[in-house]
Length: 340
Image (spheres, rainbow, N blue to C red):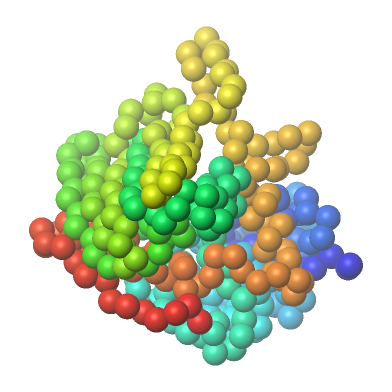
């Protein structure tokens, strides 16, 4: 099959990795890159043999492309995603799908109306450990899900990149909330608390931690703790994990266990062996699996495994956590009907 032509809009932390992974994919040709930073865009375009297009809307509508990966900050997703959908491109939108529920619903509705595939870029769906847990649950190996527990607590140093521009529920929460929906179904109610002080003392107008209790429509219940207030020296890029308890068994993912230790003169050093590790000169891991799936969506041989509906519901739940913590009361989640 002829390589499918694709582009990447937004060349920051994730976008630059998407550009490299697509350029390395044997079934894809990275034809266009776009970023508001002209020098960076031209540099990566030259590195990967792609044409640099400064205007993201022009890149999204480029007639040469079959697929577009949108990796800009979430408040810039809507206009670019709609432009790509209107042009009939397969679209990957890095998490979160959008910065508001209304914007996410616009993306979902327009994609459904035009029959355009939209992959919500929730990388944990493609991480083998989390995917293995989903497979075991779907196969009934632990029985009906009774309870779930998840945590994802990052580092104070996350703000060296984020600079306070987004919230915990939108940055980390959508990861966990999407997994919880994948494992236990739709959520009926959330009740959240939050704390602050560590990040505000460092000049960032964001909270430190959220804790929430969830009730699922199928009867399960669960908890989630998310945040980014751990010291920068915390090994493993922070703390993360997932426990799913069923009527006949349990599945547990402990993200911090790497099976390898790297110690330098400064002490223990973090290594990525799961998400985007470089192996023999090429990016692999969960990102490569996700990119492979997107290429299949772009060439028409697959449908998105994590849809615009999934992305919308993750945003809805994340913002419900913010609402509950702010108001100090539980928040009910309206039924949205079956996925389109």
